[in-house]
Length: 132
Image (cartoon, rainbow, N blue to C red):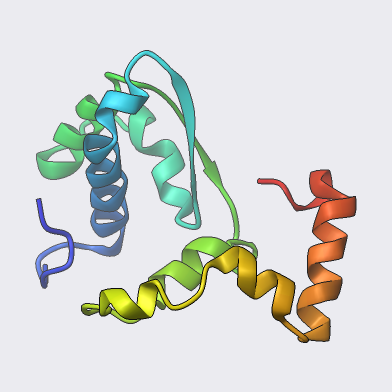
């Protein structure tokens, strides 16, 4: 299932639900038999499994979600930093030499960015404050 292509006939709720279904199908082998939580900035997905008289796609997806022990939590988009950053990543092929240019651990050791150093120190000293 490709979720990148245009889907003009789908509504926003259906697109958000499709993204959840796509991810669950992709990671099914890791999720089956476990309880897990989906954190979304789309509040109407919280009620998807409780809706009555669902039809079409939403009904099928709702039934598919019932196979799992899944909880859906709403978090405001402004507080959803990681998915927001990932959704803004440029698409396309990255040459392998660019990926291997420097290991991330080496970058952390050599950076002079004061904001980054302060932020990293905060996370290391108070990890509970920054956890999801």
